[in-house]
Length: 434
Image 1 (tube, rainbow, N blue to C red):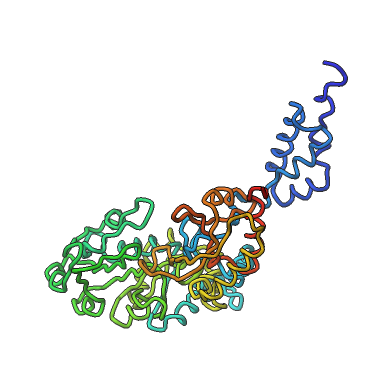
Image 2 (cartoon, rainbow, N blue to C red):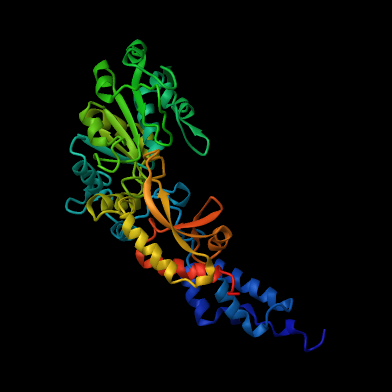
């Protein structure tokens, strides 16, 4: 090996780590991540791929922006509650609350008395205030957990009466019958796929009935010759009625006339209503349990409740969502189609003429197991189909959808200040002008 061998010029690890940029990164990202970036850069220099003088620069360039593998993306799909993208984006108030809860907080402590206090009491008070029809409330870590807790506490070793038309699969292969079986309850199926009557419930209810479960089929819709029994009728049968409304709509809303809401179900006589916090409510992932005081307290005291309880950051984010400004989900759901068209036109006008971009009518959806079949009139920027893959490869991926051989960039779920980011991403992946 001669003295001119470039491998002899590769700087030592301690020398590279002394670079002020890497010292700052060690504090933000951790020792292991920075050392790995340095080792990779040194190996590239040893093989001649990289100039030894550029090792520190290469290591800095290779570092992630933050100490998580999760990447921020722009949702230009037109699906408001996109399950694969984390469903509801949080409001600024919720994000700030989560940051504040990251350290020591009085989540289960009374600073006045110096004694233990009810966990998340501020969040529970906010939820009760949002749904006055609920005598008491409980928060667990997700919607499925809420249903598992309720079924276990009310019906373990007994029967859960459920219509065949409501035996849903909730995603990723998880099926409601399997979920119920895991709690030790026995499923009592009644009715048919398209029609279940009050007489079916009356015939099934007996000494072995733990509860009647009514599930909103939130990710599909059955039309035609159908029949279902409302909560008000089920509440006359003398056993607890549990209504899983799924999407987390707390009160009726004009945009979603067919979506069940917690307040109405409780007024109609449901003993318990369960739903998710990260769908139409617009908050962090959580399972909400609302209902009668005695039933909710029974759930709270069940041993399983401890395993399913929500953490302090979830409680903080949920309270801020309930008390704070309208969350981004509702900004997207109620977006004005004319305003969306204006933004699309402005985006197209900002692009080079040769990109074959144009504004076209589009249809958004609620998504996330909410309001199946509801169409949200929208507009999108139409591009050649190949752009869909290229836009996903950007430093901040832009996720569009492909429809009829075109890539559609729907701005419904994109904050207007990010329109410029979308435009820059399109330009970055576009072919050069002929």
